Image (cartoon, rainbow, N blue to C red):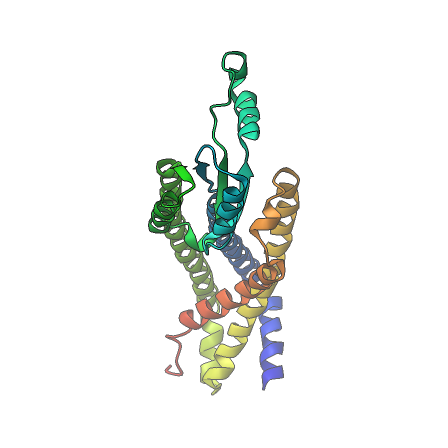
Length: 287
C-alpha cells in the first residue's frame, strides 16, 4: 500500500506540473522566510552575548598599597564566583593609556603620577543581569584595597534594553512571517485540491478508501517540501558564502551548522504535510 501511495504521489507531480511548481515556489519562499527569521533571532542572541562579555568593571586600588597587599587583593578576586577574567593595570600602564587616548602628557606639568592602579574585571554570563551587577559593585566597593568602582551602568543597560525591545519586534515579525508562510502554502494547496475536485469525486464513486485518496496528496506535499528545502538550502548557502566575505562573524552566529541545515531540509516537508492535512480535513467519503 505504501508503495502505491508513493507511486501515486509521483504521478500527481507528473500530471500537474504547474500545481507542483506553484507549491514548490510557495514552500520554498516559506522556508527562506522562516530561516531568515531564525537567523535574525540567532544574531540578536549573539550580539547580546558579545555585549555581556565586553562588560568591564574597573576597580581602582588605594594608593600606597604594599606588594603583599596587592597579591592578597589578586587572590581575593580570583576566588569570586562572578569573575570570568581580570586584568591588572599598574599606575605606569594607566599613564600610558591616558596619554595614548587623550594625547595629553600630564608628566610635563606634574612631577608625579596621579592615576591609580586598577583591576579591569569581566563577568561570567550568568552574572550580567542588572541586580547581579549592582550586588557585585557593592561587594567590590567593600574590599579594603578598593578606593572606587567604575562601571558605565546606564549605557550598558540602555543597550541591553534596546536589544530586548528588538527581540520583541523580531519574535512578533517571526510569528507574522510564519502565519503568512503557512497561509501562502495553504492557499496553494487548496487551489491544487480545487483543480483536482472532479478526480477526487471519481475516486469516491469507485469506492476508494479515504487513506487512498488523502495519502498520495500528503506524500506529494512532503516530496514537494523536500525539493523546496533543497532549493532553499542552495539559495541560503550562496547568500551565506557571499555575506561571509564581508561579515566573518557570521560563522559564530550559526554555531551548529549541521543542525541548521537539518532544520532547513526538514522544514519544507513538515510545512507541506501539516498544511495539506489541514486542507484535507473536510474531505470525506460522502458523495
